[in-house]
Length: 366
Image (cartoon, rainbow, N blue to C red; front, side):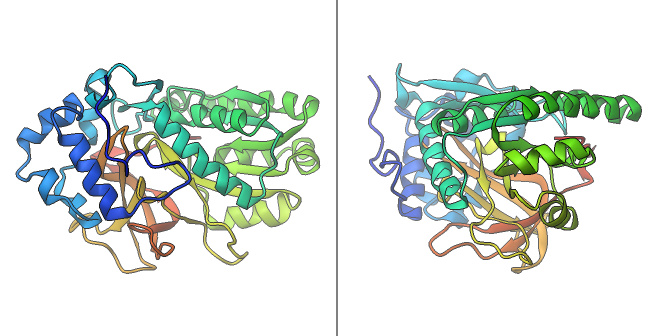
């Protein structure tokens, strides 16, 4: 038997709960000995506050220490809340990219994936993604969440998915070792492979990382195929600077919508760029509030920077499936006013830090 969650945690996927009510319910779920995960029940003993009484609003999430590094070693069984009982339907165990040390892990459950996919489907419809189209993904199939999300999206929208597998850790290792020629050859090998499905299949949606999209754009045949067949290019997994975004959108792929996604394995998902942006607007990403939220802060003080200024991104994931608050990410971004009713900040013009946690950040091709 599983313990029943507060209804606000199990609300229908087409409803958005009140933010503060949701946060309070999540704290009760994750820190009740009957329903919380072994990880958080043990970690609660080291906190100098009681989440069930002291965390009532979005700003209170700052009380939590940044525990994301502990997800490098924790047993994944200890991340599943006890309240699921024997009925926890696992979609997958996904890992971070290992850019700044050993990879971190999360367990993704079916109820969270259903909620995320409903939200993403609504946004894709608003952006004009075709339904029933075939997808080509040029990115990691695993252990990162990237491949799992694309598989779910293609399946739920009625298309076939073609996949070119990328090992971003190998590319980062090559670059870190100074073997740039090998990294370049590997990246070109990925583009070579993408040519075959583009030639032979009716690919309507292309999902690709920005560095690989730039490489694809150097090949006239592939540019022609994309402009002829593809309706939407989705870029994700690495940053895309504003000038290159405009060049690709206006000059290289004028017949195709180019839509950005921003997320990470550690928030178990991604958010799409804001619907209705003008040609001169920066690429803005709105939170999936109250589940996936952002703050843009001064890394020294952890206080929000003014709107329009650049700071470091703090990510929060709060769901029945997982609690991971106050995670200082390796990205910087402009702080943008979110849509009404959303918790936290929207972010724009995301870019990686050069150094994070005393480690040099190697973005590579993902």
